Length: 400
Image (cartoon, rainbow, N blue to C red):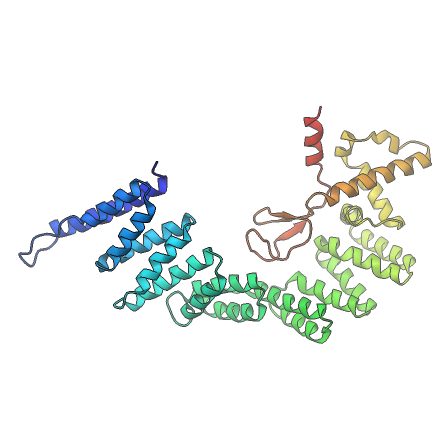
């Protein structure tokens, strides 16, 4: 049975054919030549399409393009339709056929090259797509689109130096800032250098990442990680505390590092004092500290344990699972045991549910992803601030 896209394409061809016939029939006549007849070839191609004979239709229209220059735009539309339907092999054949024409105008050749590059991209043939986009980025009317596509390709292939070059050229031609995106490219290079223990290069890349506006939060975090890895604990602690002060949501990444450094130096008293001071200045962070401690299994630190206890006592959803009155009993041992049991359960639940969510498209993940895999935007993920009980509640309701 013919699909909706087939009928749309059929309508397109009928409209084009009818328009051509009407222009010849009613347009200006400077000569006595008879009006051109309705193109029978179109009708043959439509017959193939309406009968779902896609291969026959494709071969038919490919033959037509070698005969009639006026059908090229129609073939571009046909190729685009095939690509949108996921039939990129057919789209590739159409656009390759157009490019093979020796008498093709330069503008039409660029259009065909751009269409073919998008075909290759849709087929996952990144190397072929890259070659065509590089060519189109050299002065064609598709420069901006080609550079945008190249940035996407280099991101997938993790060729960050090339991505920086393409991004900087795109800023000039496109008239818009890509400072945040380019800063992340530098951070990728910094992290790769740090993984190889090339900390001098890593610091240079971070410096470049932080040179633009707006600054990426990732640059500050990467700089702190470099200080941690080089045993510069004083600098690392200062940077992690600054990150939390300036960007509260990054506590999920910074707090575990702060705790680890203090414990490594056997300075739990200083840790307790630092956290008390932080919470005194920012009382709203109690729940964030508690959730971070639950997710990362951080315990044995009085100020953090107190945050976790308040968090559990003030979580109304927990009443679906436990008797909160037990937690306020006069028996201290029973209280501690109950809290410990609930905390272990919450930790398991938190590690089994998404911890971060993209603010642009809603994509969820277990770890912080600086580029969302779904919408491809940079630095749009934010951590959840509470344990997600939805799944457990739904399971509980279903089993009642």
